[in-house]
Image (cartoon, rainbow, N blue to C red; front, side):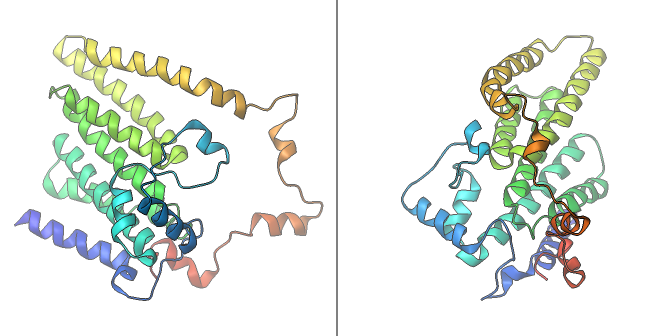
Length: 275
């Protein structure tokens, strides 16, 4: 009964936040995901196009970056006008569900775990960026919540397969949202290392396999990111600040800083994107 009530509550909250899904002829206002771009991706998928995430993709190359996860499926089955909102809504459900499972694994009660899952899924970290069209960040956070659950099961003595699932989820998150997912992964990595140390001290043993995997991953990360880091570091003494747009008058600086401001009558979209 509790599970059924929780599912109904989650469904009501999702439909309230993204109620545009239920209205025909209405599309979510998503700045970085215009309908023309969505239609382009759908055509690419119809032709069997799947590109892989690569370091160069974050350096200004154009075109959709797709992988064979559920996002590609929703692109195929949803109408153009509902794709972005559908992706965000489904990611909210996944993030809530996975974080709920993580908290349950940590020993929290059903109500406490459900409250934590809802707090993550409907956090302003996600809902407030719906208007900007940053769909990948929704999906990335959902995958990272899944990685938390999988890794927690491994740390608590379950099969090593759960560590592989956690790594897969992190990879999918980075493929969907390189910037936000990378920042969150730094905190996740520190948390997992701390949890490993605590687990080892409690069991008076050394998790050789997991620690070895961490060391191997660190080596691979350095090798694969070094070429990209050389591209990102300014060369020839030119500073990054020198390439930033400048304004000569206070009025021009104000106009540049506020060009993405949201009108006061649209502030509600930061918590209800479909408004």
